[in-house]
Length: 188
Figure 1 (cartoon, helix red, strand yellow):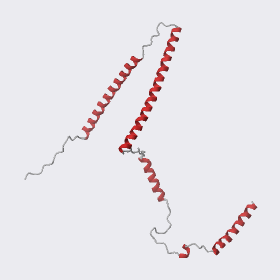
Figure 2 (figure 1 turned 45 degrees about the vertical axis):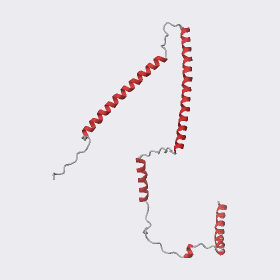
Figure 3 (figure 1 turned 60 degrees about the vertical axis):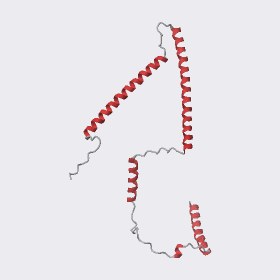
């Protein structure tokens, strides 16, 4: 029988140095693509603004002409602000409708979205657990073993005495204590 040969792993195995180099190359490529995309969006924005906003031609206008141009621009700005407000309101209503429809669809399907859990920092939980441990360490010993059995007490001590004589006796003890408190208040 031929000796067993070690099975080769499928796929490519890279050394940590090569992995680090590959990661850097991927990050550089992603950064370049992001930069190109941002430049493309900025160019599209400039083109859209240039198409919508006419060039400001104020050369050769006197004071009355400039005032007229300012009033025209003010009217344009007010109109655009109204449009912006309308679009924002429409967008808000549409997002509300989408949320309501998603809830209805989930109710019909029987699927319910799980609430997002609050993230807790690990450091705060460690601090809390350490403070609990230290509070238990500061407790004083009573001198008795935790596992020692308590001596049995008389059953008479365990059961309360509800007899009338016992209640009268308690009333008599309370009365002199009340008199002493009243005397102390009068002395003050």
